[in-house]
Length: 394
View 1 (cartoon, helix red, strand yellow):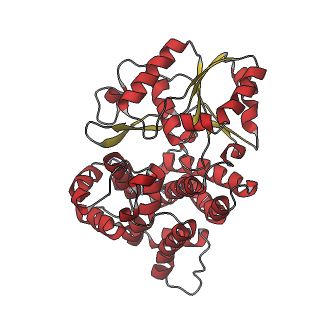
View 2: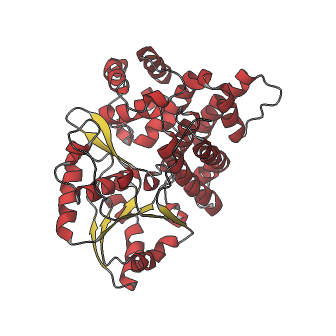
View 3: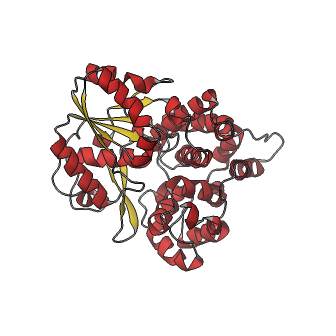
């Protein structure tokens, strides 16, 4: 067995309605003034009002900042960090999906480091050296797992790239996983964020950096998602399915922080930056095509995935059993009624800012080849491979 290191991330508290205990959590940790980092959609959904009830009951001072956006940009992060600096808060509470949580990580980091977030992104001139301002996360989707990870993904609009600042100091102190907050999540968002979590679980399981602990967590997340995602999407008020998806997303977040990712995220983050495809949509669409290209790298693990997703592989040879995993994901995407082709993405539905065409492929490929986790994929990914994936998915 190869040597490995496993990082245990944030403290987790799970329960239906657990977010109402935020006052007790803050009191136990000794914090007094709270800065809530969120977006207008979360406020409109009434979720922040529920959080505020707990803060008011505990007589906490707090400030709500709802100017965060999907796919946070350098400018948005720097501006939010300045507002936080002036607030006098001693803890940040991030409420929302992956984008608000990623933004909050970067904001908290900039409270203990000088300069712009631009300087700390991968390839930048500065490194994270200090602990960040305390951060507590309450995710409102079952997908990104960002509440458990050490990365903050930021969009650079100047060169149309998504790059992360990654350091274990960015891991939040605490995560409250409350499936009650996800009951109102629309079916399409439930589907695409859930497929994002599945992508984390699958990519971390087959990753060249996977280890026995991360593999166990990846496989459990795959099982839980396979058993629950259809019900969570089709019957959104089914609390057991929502709870299982929320926990699976968190498990997958721990798994990929330790095991790594791969080509799905490499291509997904690139088309997200170039054509503003929402991250969950990109993962949903690309996952089966990337699996198809990667399956020959580890037939045994892909067979495990097929079984975890409920496929009957009895009597199949190893190769066919492995490819059954690809079939399982295609079937899942079809059942969830999500886009399965890049050409299906509709700017009018905010699935992209412009149609994705073959003319974009050269730019996409160039950026994907610079993705720092590409080597985690169990097969060596070449430019021709990326082009073949894009052509198949178009």
